[in-house]
Image (cartoon, rainbow, N blue to C red; front, side, top):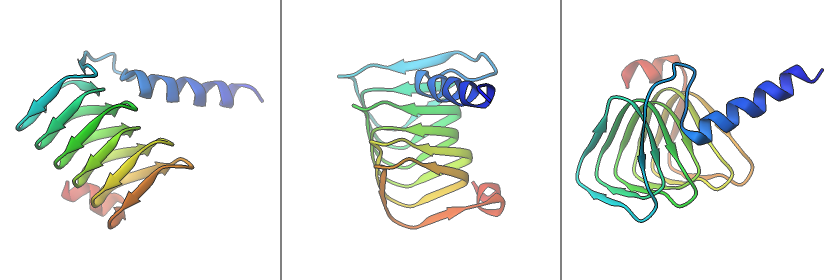
Length: 133
């Protein structure tokens, strides 16, 4: 009875903290940091600052409450609490948390949308969509 709830909370906490089950390193972009231009990383990324340009992350991309991206995002998995003005191309799972605001199109294999999350644009979900990313 309690096992499934505990597991769910642990997964959500790990997603927010930018860790994943592979134990990969995480690049942290702190609040107040602004990156201009293309950003690419082959590990997990935790963003609390802002990126003005295209984002490519080979693993998990996590955006905190204070984060902002103006540009397209390409990642394996993503957990979003911040604001995005651009399209998302997620190969696996996309999790829009309660404070997420997306102005752009979404392409992902799977998606979870929490109450309060908002997006304005086309949304394409499924295996065929993910294969094109």
